[in-house]
Image (cartoon, rainbow, N blue to C red; front, side):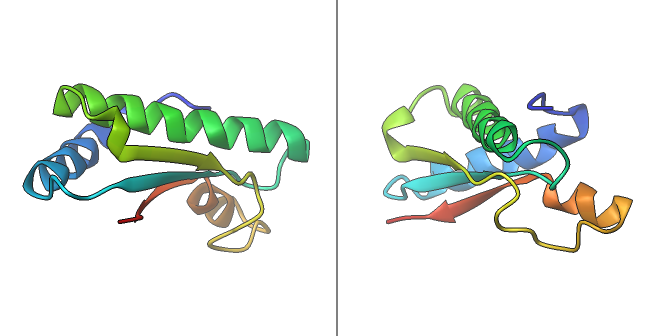
Length: 100
């Protein structure tokens, strides 16, 4: 799913606070999935995840879309093995990368 969970709110706020303190930073939000499902569907899902996080951070910031890029990588960059439920859960994520 690309729907943010309520427990993500604290992290979204932390990211927005960081970006307020670093107004010169530009970031890329990288979406990822586990390996369940079709690869093309996972790429689309990972893009939607990154966009959902971007929208939530922008809402906290009150603007600044020009500071963001987003990308979706599907299951191509797993953090952990997809052989376990826990590993698949950790692979479903969005990461923030400073690009400048």
